[in-house]
Image 1 (cartoon, protein in one colour):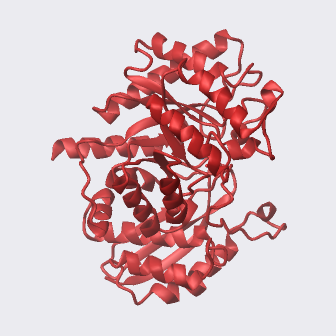
Image 2 (cartoon, rainbow, N blue to C red; image 1 turned 90 degrees about the vertical axis):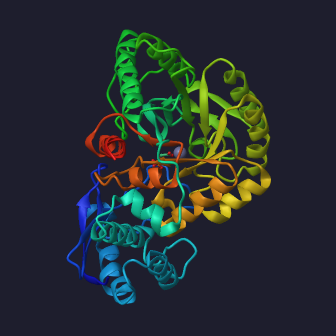
Image 3 (cartoon, rainbow, N blue to C red; image 1 turned 180 degrees about the horizontal axis):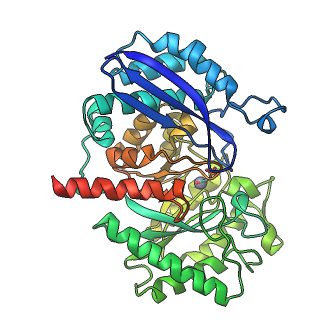
Length: 419
Ligand code: PGA
Ligand code: ZN
């Protein structure tokens, strides 16, 4: 199969700025469309999200340079490679870019093409996307165990104003079983949480990811109390069906020291670990992500020891940025027990899957995640999560670009049950 036609254009992402979408048509007539998201609290080691910088349109956030790179550089380079040779196409784009972080062509340019080609070939083969990804990369994944929901229900940090220093507080399904049922349980709890916040005189406006972003929340610990109450009120047992996950996104409040503005407190890494350790036995935590800054390796290692003893998963996001080298370092140092997977942190499908494979081989869990800055309705990550056997999919509970991911997961569950 050959690429017969490829177009690239700007679409709006949920953050109100443009992002790039690519439409690939193969010589078989099959079409693949894909768009890419961007982060609000992107790690410094991520692939570059290239924008125009032309202040006369979109405050400099336009994607015309990216589109030009796709049409004038990427397309001529990959046009003669068989479309089913996904690894070869991705490798050609990485070489063409020639930088370590895809700064020249843009990680967004490269990823949009990578994903659109994969989808076009999956469509040509009349295969669900997750099956095509499994086949292409030789993944042997147990499809009776689908990724479970990790639903962001309260957000702060860079995702909302005047609220918590920690970025995301999640309700996480604990028991396996039906994804559809577990999404229901988590969302029923989200609705109970709304009542609890209102009763506490907190606003229930939502932030970037469709989670509550309550102004005037008293402490960074308060959301844990509210979530535990909400789980109980929804008729479940905290720590049994549903637990709590947190993404502190600590790089965002690190400036040499860790500064929790909400509480007017400053900590060294060691002191911050002590602060966390007092919370660990009080709440039913499933996983804790980016509790420390992205290059604070020694403290990551120290915290990992503690969390392993407690049986709580310790997750790298800004630390690892879906990057094989950083993942390998984290494994060698024994710094984490799980990794966030975001294709746009690295910029090709092949590198993303390679990262998941290494995580799987070393017994780490993967959590495939949405982005907080600007998402699109593209639910590629749901198929990816299924294909690589992610333990969880981390997505917000409301807004179209979030629920599209859960709706796709439920669709996959229905399809697998029918077969
Ligand atoms: P983002 O944050 O805004 O950078 O996508 C989400 C996360 O850190 O998990
Ligand atoms: Zn994160």
